[in-house]
Image (cartoon, rainbow, N blue to C red; front, top):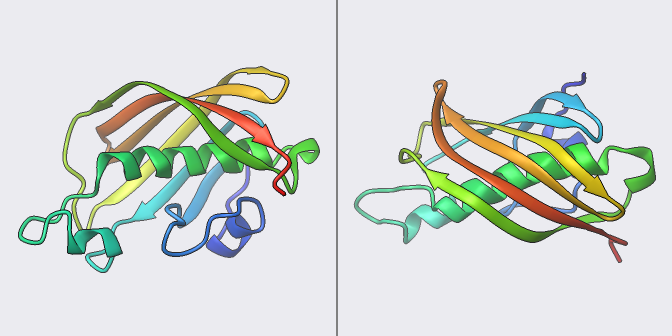
Length: 145
């Protein structure tokens, strides 16, 4: 189990600001599981339009943050270094509460199935221990080129 900084995360996944949605990885078991944190700031670019008078983090970006945590887990395996994890599917997505500026999202994704370059992860996003969102995410590992 490892803790990773933003800089170390960027050495594993290709995402960059403003689309890097994981600040730290608190727990990592390569190829198995990652637990990350996203500190949601009022300065996030999406809040300018979603919604100007009531800022709410878009659900699709919560799912993306979950996926990025999972990408750290799967791309941390030595055979996947330098590759990219692409979305291949999203199922059973549920949103239970709003995520707003000041919230700290805890993103957890566990790889539950893997066959060749395709896999499935089960993820959750929580704020203060309360479930904000959950989903099963299917990914495909590509060359990264």
